[in-house]
Length: 435
Image (cartoon, rainbow, N blue to C red):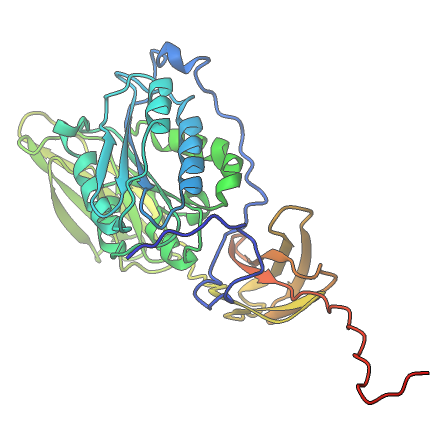
């Protein structure tokens, strides 16, 4: 059962030591820059004539695991995030669902006709308290995103922004996968000690674009980037496209060309080097996405989407997708040998020069300040950070630079031990004789 926790400094050195699971934290946020996006000059004036269309659902942790202070800060951030967005009839629609013992809809899609109205509604929302049943809320969100009686619209992009303190009382993976299988783009904002591996799997790929770890007092740092990413996800798609490409899978999406009653799709997947190894999947006419898994790394695949309509002639759509090379790690960071002025950072697995060019270790005080960088050659998997301040929490990010040009990063918090206290003068010997 979720418990209420008092508001404490996010980077205090006090408290229990980090477990291995808790060390899988915080992808670095030092470079959260993005080209400025163009928004309407006035959100109260309504969306422009060429506004995007899409359904945007905010899933907000409103349980007792979140302090009242944290809830108020997140609520203010979401209000500022949506205010400039082109919300209104014929444009983006927004809905807010609370996570608690039972999910609760604050307002459905289409109830508010501008970004300013949505902002006011978010600011007026009250914390629900109770358990953190996120899995139950995700199943409920799936119904809301595709339920026309809840204001959802068929054939428009679907985006969900989940704000969490990192914990859940019930499983999150299966209902989150169902949402992604239906083509929903998932952004996650963790304001607490969420596990990086678990949340990376829950967010849409790539996680460096869809997953943010940030303290509630620093949420404004990611506002512009997140807003731009939401607008990018809402762009209309006229052709077959691939996204969330990994070394063994990718997802496909296409515009609604058919309906459930007007026909069906035949989807074909063929390795370019093996024309005879065809995989086929027949899908209902109201399907707009599919995920292929169990693929070979660094391989070209040819995809054909064939609409079979009983009303009109529709030509096939073709696409070629290359899976990523099988690049792994770093997957775990261990902080050890903590002293007032130094800590040792180790990671696994250790990759050799045939795979990586080397590692970059970036570190800086979590409270803010200049970040420093250490280069570690390929084949090594540890380094000692020197010249640190006593009793200070640092954010440490280990990045593997692959020969392919890609990079993979993992972060953890490291806390130096306090400096030695001055030794008190010894008490006088009770048997000593005075002068």
